[in-house]
Amino acid sequence: ENYQCIFAKNEGAVVAPAAGMHFSRELLKRMELKGIESGFLTLHSGLGNYREIDVEDLTKHRMDSEEMEVTESLVEKVNATKDNGHKVCAVGTSVLRGIESAVSMGGHMKTFSGWTNKFIFPPYDFTVPDAMVTNFHMPYSTMLMMVCAFGTYDLTMKAYAEAIEKGYRFGAYGDAMLIL
Image (cartoon, rainbow, N blue to C red; front, side):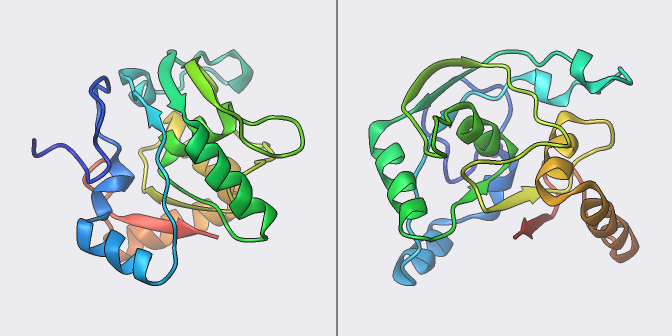
């Protein structure tokens, strides 16, 4: 129970969605009062997220498959948000991977129920999300590669250098950053 976040709903993941640990019911309510909508997808994070990358050629790294579901209600909400010129913020690398696994032609999301083994690394053109909340991830991790793809390598490394200098905490129980 201590290793769950406010978003935890469906059993199946073997690790917690760590970026979600920075959110509380109170914060979600304050966001709602400010007109910030939220939606949820399910991605059952596996231990493969924490397997170090041990290949030089990133195209040779293989992700473990993870079960995920993107519902019609989320698709409608996200696509309407994009169509109305508003930002879509992914909370965590699992959500980012889930969103990008459910992208259709034309830059919209589509419903999805199945498995994904999508490995995102630089360079990568993201289709749906404009912003992201994520923890500071460990070196050689797939999650750090995804953050570098989203925030660009140079900007991400600059943020990490500052985090180290200021004593930020890394990993699942660590501090988070917002990438715009």
